[in-house]
Image 1 (cartoon, one colour):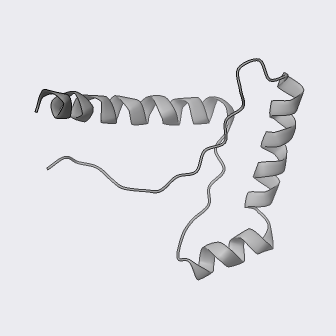
Image 2 (cartoon, rainbow, N blue to C red):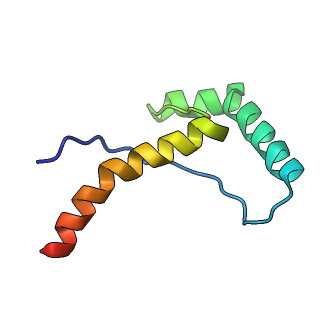
Amino acid sequence: GFPAEFCVNSYWFAPKGTPKEAVVGMAAVLETAMKSPEVKEVQDRQASTVEYVGGDAFRKHLDDMFARIEPVAKQLVKK
């Protein structure tokens, strides 16, 4: 087996060239929504968690995930 965890994550991306102020505004709205009582209620009911990660921390998260997945993907391609 492979040391791994499985999560169903949701990511929001903007097309290349999206104005920075639009990206910053959308990120602020998403971060606020993730902290709302309504989202908390749904996450509790579904036994799930919501964690907002943005900016450099999100880039690091994606880079780390890719580093873990890439070796497994390369092994699967060989089979």
